[in-house]
Length: 329
Image (cartoon, rainbow, N blue to C red):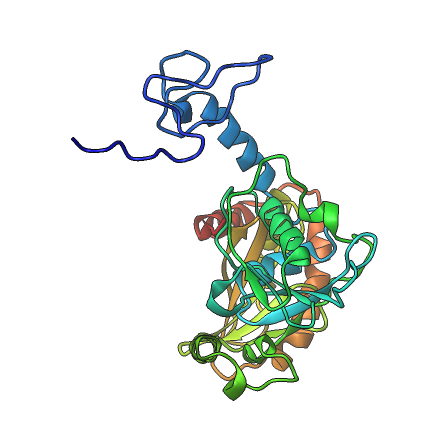
């Protein structure tokens, strides 16, 4: 006779359900019967409400943090960058620094280095959909991890702190864009002396990285070079409808480009913000678009201040921009 397999911790025998206590509905598996007794699966009953609540939190996960637009850019656009982070109340004993990094070796969520410093990865898959909460949980675990160890991913509780609760919101957020991922290796080491896994991961990451430069004259605008053409991708903090109107005004007036051969080709949404994109001819560098971008920022500020109804031509321009929108997150 076959032996019964031991059940995992927290397993509910078939037919048994967690009990509703004090009017609260316990969390169960998505396909299990909802504890409320409706007869429906949890995911189609109270699980739907819980999922909706998490989704609402995630619309702008970096809202309230300094440099929200740059947070979005580093999450979605920039291959290799780092930013020093300042914690509320200062650093814990034994942690000399905390640094945000776009990507870490082997896609680790975080790493506590041998010297106690912490690297927090930004471009990782998250478990709940609430990126701000997932990153906060990873950061807290990294601060207490053993030096020299990575921090693994895990599912995060819905009532944990978020990044805005842990970081000093009065501190500046100043990304440093790198040409490669050599920042993975501490200055006291070299690639040859690092682990073979990290060395191989570094080689693959460097080979895939698209050359990217942050403009200095405007906020959160990033030039990048691709084989076909270059681009400028600019994360903007303005309300979407107002920004679309302003860009339409400029586009209809022939004032939305960054110079000869450049054109505004559309935009995408990422983490609650809009990111207009310009195509640039091959050979147009980040330095070449610094002045045109600053001039465009002035024209855009004027257009944003206008409350006049859109003209027929401006409405057509707006429709074209809207049709070329995509949503990344």
